[in-house]
Length: 301
Ligand code: GLU
Ligand code: ZN
View 1 (cartoon, helix red, strand yellow):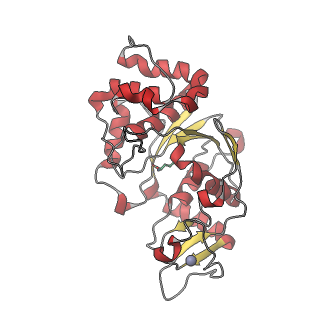
View 2 (spheres, helix red, strand yellow):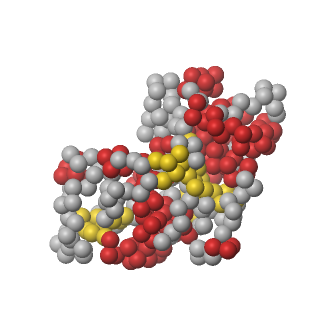
View 3 (cartoon, protein in one colour):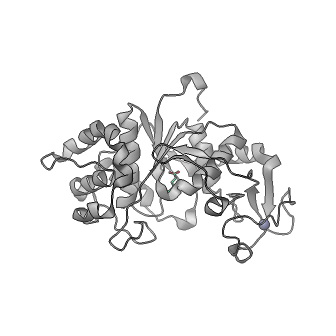
């Protein structure tokens, strides 16, 4: 999977990148649908990347379940699925390139807790792996972190306290970290547009910094509103959001369209929902920010 030469870079290549820590729920369906609609409305490609680099957090069967569910909902992807578990060599190569900017961190969770993600600099001087104990590999990030443009929210510069600094690229247990894998793969797959949930907004400055360190282009970003349950909590696997089922696809596709600011006419057939959504996506994007959880109340989420 070589990075395409700039002249062969497509005008639009998007992706959905689920982690197989559980089945899809309505929140992840909204992210999948938003990125699918954005790609299809642009006449672009939509790739599927399974972010299966954290076996301890994976649920057996979840990856296949996610793929089956996406197909049942009509969200077909282009080309073969990329499995991050098969991409170790690319991550190791990227780490090699980043060598001058890396340091080896032996801080414990307890030591870092008070710093709340802003790395206190304790291990900055350790520029090689220690012999005696396991260490995490961290990237020394620039200060301040780069700003970026979100298509809906405009130019953003986030504070270090919101993004954290010096992200882990390889964990103490030897597993690759999300930040490294996501940036290496978005680059290698030639992703031009990232559309994902707003819960990942604060990771974007770290990813842009990493892209700059690796000489990779920064994609166009659109962060979608994250939907909440009746208690105002983000729908997530941690909050035990219910898994979506193939047989509910009509009702839940409608709910996901509503969450994206699109109100499909009541008389549309189930097979007409996605074509209708694709047709109306471009003009309705500006409504994204104004979708209120109450608008979803009829959707029984
Ligand atoms: N795998 C990440 C997740 O499921 C998403 C990565 C991304 O879209 O950048 O939260
Ligand atoms: Zn440290």
